[in-house]
Image 1 (tube, rainbow, N blue to C red):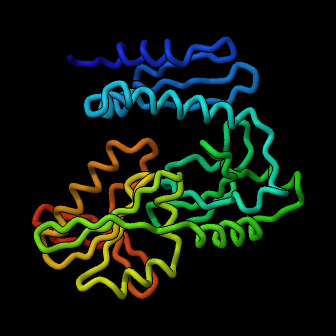
Image 2 (image 1 turned 60 degrees about the vertical axis):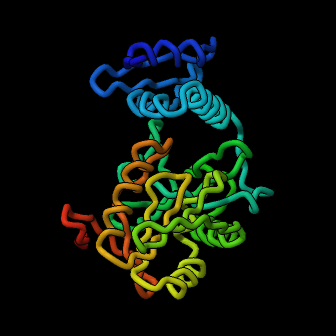
Length: 269
């Protein structure tokens, strides 16, 4: 069965129907915005991405999106405080295309990370989280440095379980706990240094979407090609894509690279 954009749009609107919401469909981009009528806050879904996931997971893919939207909209209407939630503040990774100013003009708290990525900060709410903005800081008399320090400290407390897969002599390690901060582990410098000491070849890291971190021990040219395919697959199917590029990790620094057709990586300046 072939699923069209309009068919998926109808399914999502039926599953997400609520008197407090309205739907705005962009025909040019095939994106559906689900918006709270009262506060005008909303979530945008790229329908082609949902269809891609549906082809693999069928109804489970739709269930995931519905859960994500419901929890996200709930978080947007929930009053969030920072005081008393210090243990629940974590960094989250996003692409540089992610908005830095909300539609109401309030700036989000963020830091540049690489040419491809930015670091935002969030308060964990259980099934979802709320990205911290400057208004939240001002309301509680906090500054951005305090958020950074707390978030980095909490990040180090998160476990780093890895699953290993070996392909063509190259070792690939996957971190996928689905706690919302898998990609954020790329900020755990102690963890990365341990991996750097462990690998036999080049340590190359990918964060294609929020819920996966790939660490590759690349020992030959084929390894780069395998990593590129893995990364693109995760990036395409991720709920919150970050970047399809990978990064060399050397001496505590990340350097974005892209992998050319002949399997040889090239640094992206």
